[in-house]
Length: 144
Length: 114
Image 1: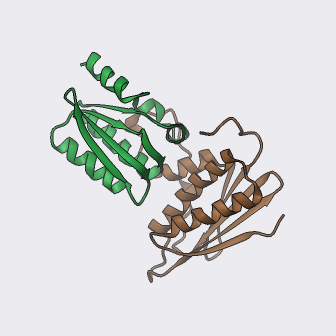
Image 2: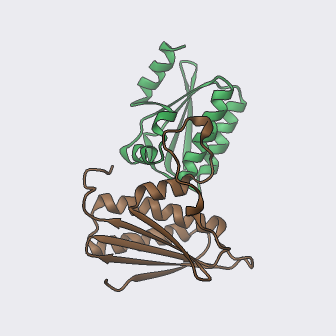
């Protein structure tokens, strides 16, 4: 696997924009096609927004690290933060056919991330680490 | 994000422009809350000028849809660019809303089903 690009960002209102710029630079350098790039942009925005909302450690200061890798047809992005342990994947995957009254407003972000990516993995090693994986082929017709 | 509000044929139309994300969704939430608090029961939201919607925006729409249903109001979404439509699809939101291609079609659907 190629060495990862790494971005270190202070947790705050500007974090989503900064990470989005890093993703754009990565996608440009790695020639990630627009459909996959769009999926990565939306998914990563959800993950970073969630870290900004909940991922700051108790002392208020905090940072998140993002690693971007491409290995052949696989793009992998890992986001690490120092917030309290939080595994968003513990929330059960949602049945998309449910009626309005059965859908809770919380957890929509992770529903989207799961739908956008091929694989989402959570690890805790003193930090929260969420890894997103997406194959580059096979989705060329499935994007805006 | 700017939100334009107009009234056409007795129907209130809200047209947000730009990105509806964590940073801006509060403005949309406040705008729809005020509109419904003011007694509006026929509401169209026109997405023609929305370039991006995140789950924060979806959350606002979900809460609005539930409130409109409880008030027996009518909510129609329209003008969705493909990027917005795709987020709705991935979140399983398409069946939850009445969605029309254009503002004209949205107003027409409210007129015929009054």
